[in-house]
Length: 93
Image 1 (tube, one colour):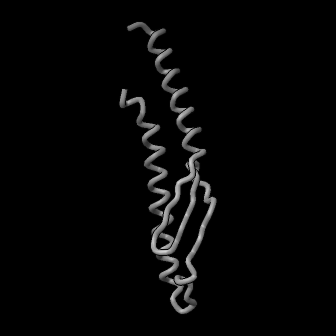
Image 2 (cartoon, rainbow, N blue to C red):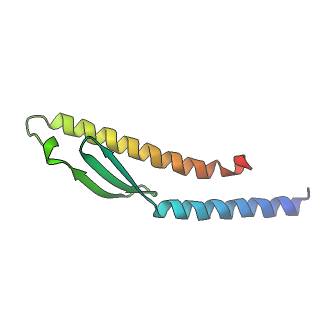
Image 3 (cartoon, helix red, strand yellow):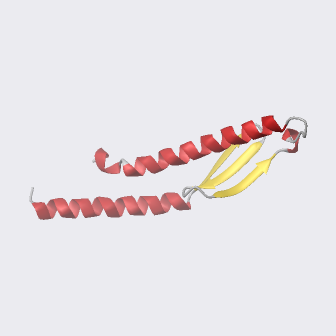
C-alpha cells in the first residue's frame, strides 16, 4: 500500500469521526432515576432537570443531593462512553 493511499484513508477516517461527533453532539440523552429526570446533549450540555416534589424534604436534603449526583454521574458516563466509541472508530477498521 502506498503512502498516498494511506494518507487518503486517514483523512477519510478523520472526516468520518468529525461527522459522527457533530451528529452525537446534537443528540439529547434522557435519564431518570427515582424522581429525577435529566436531559443532556451529546456535547454535555444540561438541557433539562426535573425533580419530583416527593423528593423535596427540607429535613432530608442529603437524599436529594445523593440521587441527583448518582443520576448525573450515570448520565455523564453514558455520554462519555458514546463519545469514546467515536474515538475508537479507527481501531475497528
